Length: 312
Image 1: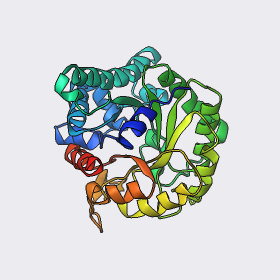
Image 2: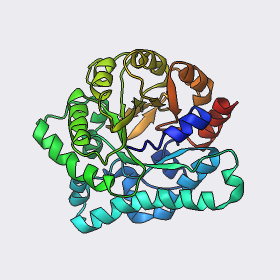
Image 3: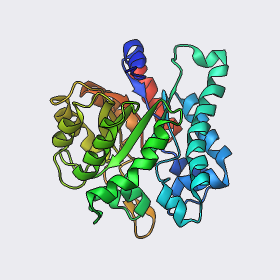
Image 4: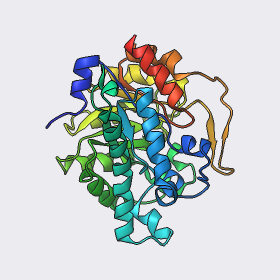
């Protein structure tokens, strides 16, 4: 199986991931107060998504993640969107990122010292569909078969969408990790990373030790990287050190800004220990991270600074 990450690791020893999509769309006037969140903009203003993707490429991102995190067939159905249009919207999320990459790559100056950026199709947890903050708790109250059925069709669709790999993001529970690993291991076309939401230096959101889910994912050849996202920056180093003892796969980190999400009021709360990504990127690299970017409330300037730090 070809590993799309390997040329970057061989040539530059790291990859820079993009930053937040939703909060950047909001900065540009998008109203995301909706259960579909950033996927709502696939319907309303896809050009805006393309422009944010392009901005991240100019900032130095090696990987773009698509606007499909909160998109799902059941979520679209609740909005009265039929199956065919749901497929078209999921495909559009990949096409927008791919178009941004192709347009960026057309300019010879953008190729200097760079490899052609990748597109990762985003797959969020069941909690993203619920839109109630449960991706930071992991307790959904549904059975494993129900969870499997929820995810399977979207995963299989995006595996054939033309994305370079799939990004299973903000996984809060061992049950959801098991479901994703089962789906991935049954389809050798899927190249992916698994990334978990964590609540401290050693546990994912449902209380499972991070090391336990790393050990589960490590033997699966289709899983190319394992890591942490949408977690406060102060927890990242401890989590990386635990994972580094358990896997030889590249570790991926893209923390949030350190602010908390208030699901009831749909707003962000101030961080107690504000920190910038670039101030810690080198520390995370030394602790084993090889793919570094940002999640909620990070932007292109953060990604530009991360690339400068890692490339220095």
